[in-house]
Length: 409
Ligand SMILES: Cc1cc2nc3c(=O)[nH]c(=O)nc-3n(C[C@H](O)[C@H](O)[C@H](O)COP(=O)(O)OP(=O)(O)OC[C@H]3O[C@@H](n4cnc5c(N)ncnc54)[C@H](O)[C@@H]3O)c2cc1C
Image 1 (spheres, protein in one colour):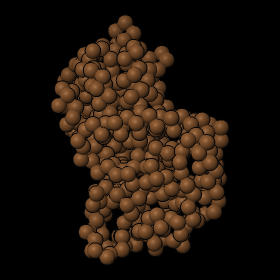
Image 2 (image 1 turned 90 degrees about the vertical axis):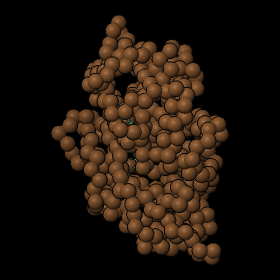
Image 3 (image 1 turned 30 degrees about the vertical axis):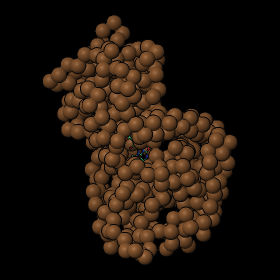
């Protein structure tokens, strides 16, 4: 059976990995020239299996005025002449209540557990050079109110099987000594020892090479502009120069999934949530030198910025902009990232930030990705999209679900 996967980001590649493992013949198509050119490439690099609390949370109502009005806010909203933007915002605000957030947390924790199992099995089997580390993750809170709220979430997640601990400022520094100069700004932190980090671009390149060895075909620089329907089934994907016939199709196009689904009159509730990253090349440390950068994944909750160590590099990522499909790298946003970095890790002040990057998270209003077939859609069209800010974390879990659904179909 031949499956055509549209999209060679982390979600499409992990889908191709699981499908080829199950013996399906797979073709991967992408509009870009190589893998991970969308939201995946230089993302925050965090495998946040336990930190899945959705953005759509009841606490957003109290934070909203500051998030929208403050000049240093990590959230930017630029109203567009785009009905989809307004529909998405309304659906997002509707999802910002306790019971919905609890349901989403439970759903994402289950998917994340499945993802961890599938990812670890893949890592144990393959020889990948992708700077994977069992880094642990420390989320820092600057105010006692936000720390209290985080502790409540930790207790909720504990009842769902997560092992996390609340740390005082002193314990945070003991866990990550590079935070030494930031002690005065920390009210407390939530530490999850089991979280990991991985270089998504290196992972995607490694997966491509494994998939090619398995006989998976790649078609780059091919944008699918039409899915041909016949007798309620998709029979072919059309690019301007090629027609790819297959038995089943997986739409894993990130934010690009929306336009392609629309050609079949299917509306996906996905809107781009733009984010940025920079990468620091870290200088080698002398024998007794103080650490200048973290080895633990650190998140500054107030600034919504994440730090992950990737070998001799530090990835810094964050911000959330509702500005449509614009991918320009804003100098102001990059400046905000580097300023935050030097305020938290001042010894990095002398190191130049590299590779300014932006990506569009394919965000659903609730935070739950769209995985599987959809009612009213052709039965051989599977969706694997809308992973928002957790696509790296959840990719192998949703890929496993797609492979299972396809085997049953
Ligand atoms: C700043 C930032 C930091 C992040 N940090 C993290 C993190 O730390 N941990 C985490 O788990 N997640 C993180 N994420 C989220 C994660 O990166 C995304 O959820 C994930 O990359 C989505 O993967 P994808 O494969 O669905 O989409 P993409 O990577 O965008 O890939 C989709 C691909 O489909 C192709 N495509 C689209 N339409 C078509 C078409 N019609 N024809 C052919 N090809 C098409 C595109 O060219 C693209 O290559 C972050 C995201 C950002 C922006």
